[in-house]
Length: 173
Image (tube, rainbow, N blue to C red; front, top):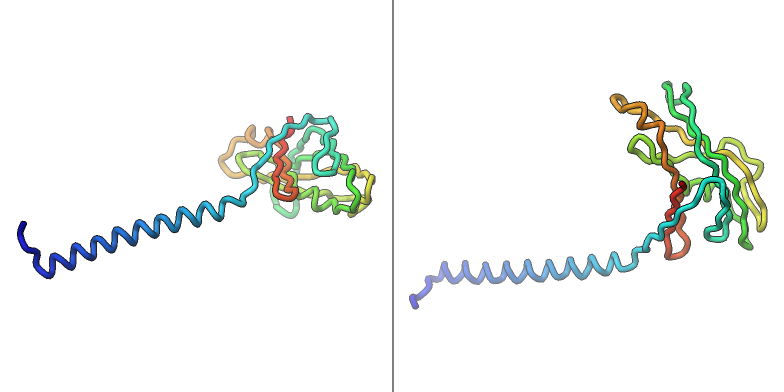
């Protein structure tokens, strides 16, 4: 075996230290990744039929099928697809709930994008125990240039609800 020069010894030591540092950094990143993602909530998928009542997290929902019409909107200064979703919400829990916290859980997939809506008028802003509310959820879908019109005429309605450590995703059919 031949003798190494001082320069060659430094290169070997530097290479060994670099490999060890890379190994420890990788190990640190893996451990940290697992620690951060261990607390992530699993998503529980559910299906619900339009027009049928179901209960989720202490709230009863009855959602009708979305309908749309194409109309000019002054705010957007263009024609939009305005989806209307009739919904009935009943608070089955003991405390009060804001309808705006519930409405923000609904989303519509149309034209390859996710859209959120709001209600325009409501009799109540807060539902006490056993209170019910019927309202219309309006979701405006803004068409993109070059996208086919038929892509906006189809829509899938979803609801994502977080309750404690669980997340529920409800797909309407």
